[in-house]
Image (cartoon, rainbow, N blue to C red; front, side):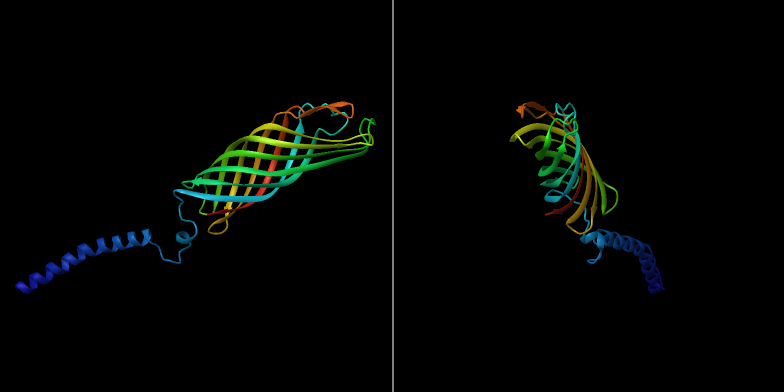
Length: 232
């Protein structure tokens, strides 16, 4: 009789505790997924501080707001170049970066729009040095969007050439703007980013270019960047 009671008690205890062990095992399995699991090896949530680098082509539509030479040369044109930058990622969402690169454009005229200048060209090259902050919002394990702001300096080189004169000058303008982007993480530490930015820069000017003044007024730019990045 005593053996029967002991057997029943042991059986009841096993029935009560076995679901607890099963739940505990499931919890441990979630906390420590299989070693080959995609989520555990590629897109673990980021914490702490990491570095990153990125580079890629850029295209920018530039508008001179109050161009002294708008009747002679175009005051709105497209520039092409490259963007390169790097910085720190804090806790996976805060991106602090320093960025540079270049964009350039060349305008040539056999006869200028006003027929004042003949065989004349103006070449523009700009090199930004910008500091930026972006906050990243995760949409999925591999896809995220970001938004932020930037500020810094843009260094301009302008080369002017006509049958009577060749002249080049360098100027610096203050630049500020905002940016949004979408990022696809295609490997453990690699990503592809497509971004749009709008910037405003202070004017660049020269008092005498071939007998005429040169002043751009404020410089507006709508720029698109396609960059490849790596985290480390």
